Image 1 (cartoon, each protein chain N blue to C red):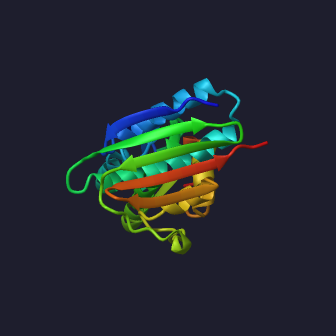
Image 2: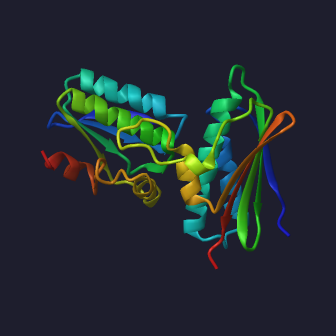
Length: 110
Length: 135
């Protein structure tokens, strides 16, 4: 399940609950689109409640990163589980999707 | 000798939740499988399940079967579906570039399993995923 929230700083926070697989990947893509259309330049994907991510979920995050960059902004991920970190390492995406410890840290980077 | 856990499900994305559920049951029955083996096997199995669902649903969803087996030295998943033959060449599978939005599934499965095999036999696709358990 994906929930979209706006942080007082103007950043959009997308909270992923449960698993992010082929099932929920389209919803994440749509939510990032909605956030970017709503003028949010910083999009934070809060993964603290995400227990499992597959390559489809990762593809949706990358699509979101590209959409945010195209709008002149950025997409950051926060609080990934060990499983998500493993997937990021194995796919060589730790640099392009640098994980932040919390949503607050991801927003504070500016 | 361990019992086999099986499921039969339609080749649609929602069936991935059933695959996770079956893995959960396997771990409940075999709490001795260590967390790292569970996590990496689950990554590989779900990637192959995603592949099966993607191809099995073309053009109409068809049923696939999954059998899980936990042995003292390995965990094993076998998929079977009557979908179209899949063209896959494991020797040429590479991880796509950073900004690719797809194409990581089989590469990820190969990195997290010790063995991934595919064959098309008569009218059926067969996938095998094996992870050797930590000693």
